[in-house]
Length: 423
Image 1: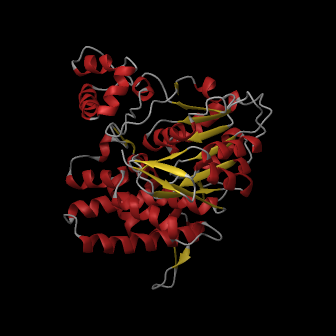
Image 2: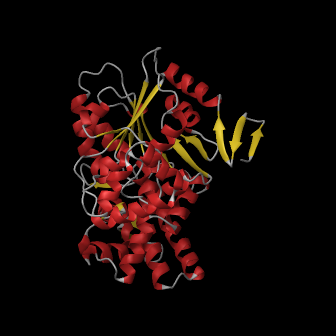
Image 3: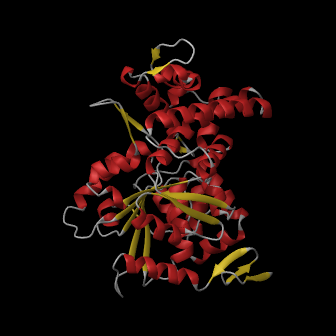
């Protein structure tokens, strides 16, 4: 076993994996103090939604802080009843047997036999059941640590101190409206960290976007100071495999700075930023243009020149849209640009664009794809197109010198709308 010591933060590295024996405890105590937690009263963190990123986020916290059982409780909620199909069960069995550490863990937990039975077709597995063993249905190839899974939403959230929204933006409003029913008698105000990247359009009383944090605020009545957004150039499986990444947590200073410190890890650097709106708008926009990037990659057989031309044009559209919809937007640079870049390179939306271009998927199949989850870029295409078609947002055409709807200056968005929405 190879080991080394980083004298700057007193981490011990075993085979390249950081093992911090003192800093985590201190960070946890600092956050507990800010939240007014007393001895014997654990900090309760609940992930709502178990897609790839939501599951990985919960697993990262469990890996780091799960050892402090008397101080913190980490759980994740997902709906019960989602069956794992036979093909996925067979693939999962292959993944298990290819990883000695996972195989040994399941045997120790007396959980291996059910995967054998599922492989033989003698048993049906369920998504919440396999998540307890560390398998996310949308990311079977990347086993996680075992997680505490709750299928009753009221049980999961009623006393939570921190709720992590890992739901698709299209489901956020509905679920948090239900959550609000369980918080009517609360005395303390929870903190909500939203990971959702999607946008809804509203036309009344004036055209505007509704971001996930705004949807949560309206659904629950939680003050916006307690609702934050975390995003960045993050591919879930790569982050869990300890590939270097960074993110920004955006919102009010009271919580974003201590949460950035709490979430920061040697391989996952979390910065903080006050510009909540721009980061959420960009989070939704990048999924739109990632679908187009996938189409370009497929149609040009991965031509580097074609993809770079597309990147130049799509970032120009993104900057135009963001400046139109935000009063003082953050520049498309640093983590914002990196988030766009990695999403165009890799991710479910780029994959979806490739499959559409190759004819292996059609829009009639919908935007919820088995093994991938919700393709949030599809609904975002419709939302941005609808919003930017409103005459009340008209801008001056740079060549024709007449007012036009902003969407007329967004040829990529117009084309994606024709392909994905109108067919």
